[in-house]
Amino acid sequence: MIDAFARPRGGVTWLAAFVCLCCTLPYWRSLSLPAISDDYIQVALGRQYGTFAGFEALAADPLYRCRATSLWLTGMTEALFGSSSVVLNLQSLLLHIFNVALIVSFGQFSQIGYRLSILVAFFWGLNERHHEAVMWYASIPEQLVLFFMLIAFGALLKWWEEGKPAYYAASMGAFVLALMSKESGVVFCALFGVLMIYHRQRWRRVARAAIPFFALSVIYFAFNLKSRENHLHWNDGTFEFGWHFVPVIANSAARLFTLWGLAAVAVLVYFRKSIDWRGPLLAFVWIPVALAPYSFVVYQPRVPSRHVYMASIGIALILAFALAKLLPMRIATNAILAAYLIFNTGYIWFYKHGQFVERAEVTERMIGDAKALVSQYGTRPIRVLCFPLAPEIASIALNERLGIDPGLVSVVRAFDSSCGKPKVELVQD
Image (spheres, rainbow, N blue to C red):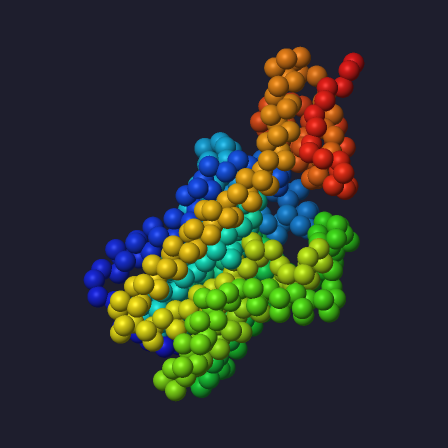
């Protein structure tokens, strides 16, 4: 299917474990981050929808039924371990590592091999571009949709090689869960193109296998389109159909490459005569395909970093194909891998971490001020002034952290920078 590289010497399990451990390094500091804005809403929704009692209400919600798996996971996590920021951050990191391990597991297929899959897992797991999907718990749907897509694709490849219907059924089941994790799960259908390109003589079998997946995607999209008027993100200025998606995709894809990606492209061009270009070209195509569901965003000229979590696999593939050509130069290869690990870890530790601390400061400052007032005057009605986020975040955060009844909280939003930092004051009886 893809350029087959010999299996690396030594135990694959130990090497895979080492890669997974390396991929935790950029996020060790993030485990201490406090909850950030929408994290509070995620926990509240998990409590509301993440139970059997909330199933009917969840099914009727056009936005959150497409994020059902994350709400179930959050609800279950809170029930078992609580909803402290440490618990949620650790869960997010573990899910990321599970995805790294799933990518490694694709080495079991003879036409891929562990040397390629381990390199892809290393480059993808450490890539700083999709850091937000790991560091911000409210972004966990991005991790879950990829988690189920990887399972679905692995089961599909097993079915392709062994022909057992159980694997095809497992692939379809995982695909359904991907659709219940995020709308972007529909891009899984594009992966049938991999089989089509590498097994063109068996295109009829590929087409027959793809039909149920495409049919389910069409039905899924039709239901979403039908509920568009009641869908929050289609009515709050987040997404809008239009040709602006073209520059958004171009801008987002370009930012994914960075110097590492450009260097990898240069290596591939240098070795162009000895490369099976089907693999790298599929990686190039995957990037805009994976970005497409997010590209109708209207509040900025590129998709947020959390939304490139899936697309950055394309960059990891390009880097892996390039480094595979340099493997005979062992010292240079090890130096590149070490530099990649140090750069991405350092970038997240010393640059991005501070940004997330600042993002959490809005709610942390409000909670601190409210705590001081409650300790001095007891629980009384509270007014929050100059709050720059959605009002429900303030009331949910105060209830979650201080036990203040949301009915006692009134919030005045800030609509310009002149308002300053959030202020908390007691409302006199």
